[in-house]
Each structure stands twice: as structure tokens, then as C-alpha cells.
Length: 288
Image (cartoon, rainbow, N blue to C red; front, side, top):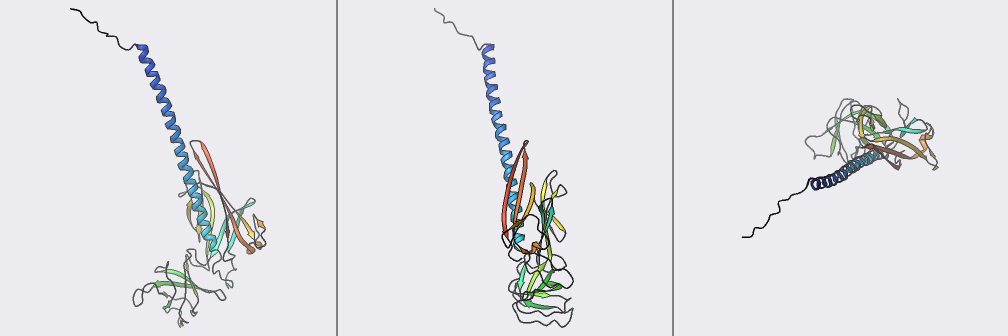
């Protein structure tokens, strides 16, 4: 009987080492690509977040500048008549801005009924208005007469809880000797005083701004909140009625400003790579 010899030979050590080396090289290449893609993704995410913060910051400033000067009284007896805006200057550029308005929240109502006589300084009375959206019980209200922009301070508003359809009347409470006329404006006030002031500026660190970052801060009558992070630079320039533009207007010239150019820079560092973006917007003042 004829026997067939079997081939019992396997892989040599050299062959195994070559295969292991090839697999190692492939794995290193794959991991390098993975790490590179992850770094790129982190950078893109950080850049996207920074861009979103820039847009939020610009939207907040724009919305507030639009209402600058709204129903600011022109004949205050106890205070200097404020301008719609006030520039804060650092270096050669305005780096902060204060916006004055009768309502920081932008909440107003117009009296729609005839004259209401308030015979006593502490008598409550109701007045019909065209809208009470945005008002809540206990709000402070400024009464302003648009015809001559007189200001009457010291009201509190309450919703009428029964007897009339919701959203039609407010009750005004005490501390006034003035009558209320059809066409008068009621402005929701954030705090006591002749008007509300909103300031935008940059802050670094703190309880609300991440460490080693600059943030856009908004202060309403002294109460500060962070609007956006990753904001590295805030600049304002001012366009006058004659179309000339100034970086730092004087107290006199600021009364003739008709538009504000806002420049925001955003900066983010991810994986030791720094990305900068700039956003610029020209905002017209509607109520200067």
C-alpha cells in the first residue's frame, strides 16, 4: 500500500512578524485618521458654538438698539433729559453702550377710553387699553403722554381678575395726582425711576462667564446677565445725520446719531488651534 506524505509545515516566525507589522501599520494609520477626524469635529463644534454666540449677541444688541429712546420724556423736572444712547469709550473705540428707553422689556399699552379722573392719590381705578400682553400682576408702570412726552411716575399695574374679559383692562394703583386720557401710553418699567437703562459691555471670567473667556454682558438698571460667551471684542461706531461716522462721539454729537455700527469678534481655541470670526451690523435708531 502506498502512503501519501502530509505537509505539516506552518507559518514561519518571519512570516508572522511581517503580518503583525503590516496590521500594526494599518492600525496606526486608521487611528491617526480617527484622531484627526475627531480633532476636526471638535474644532467644528467649537467654531459653530462660537458663531451661534456671535449671532445671539448681535441679535440682543440689535433688538435693544431698535427701542433706544422710545417714549423717553423730554421735560423731566427732576433729572437731565437722557439721550437715546450713551457711549462708553475705551481706547479709540466705544467699547460699551448704554441704551435708554421707557421699557427695557418693550412692553406697552395705549389707553383707549376717555379721561379718567383720579380724585385721590391712593384711589385705585381701571383703564381700558388696546393690549395687556406682557403685563403681569404687580408690574410697575410708567404713564407717558406722547403729545408732549410728560412722565408720571409711581404706578403699579394689576390685572382685573373678574368683571371684564381678560386682556382688556389694567388697574392703576396710587401715588399720582394726574388724570388719564385716551391715547396715553403705559410702559412696563423694570425698576423705579424715570426710565430704564440697558448697558452692553465685555466681562472676563466670573460666576457666569467661563474661566479665561470674555463674555457679552447686559445690565438692566444695574442687574447683570451674561448674553453670550466666546466674545473677544466689542466695538461701536456711530453714524450721524450727515452720514459721517465717529468712533467716540461727544455728549453733544451723540444727540445727532441716527445709526450704530456694531462689531463683534468671536475667538475659540480647540486643540491648540485658534479660530477668529467677525460679525458687523449697522443698526438704525428708530426713536432717537
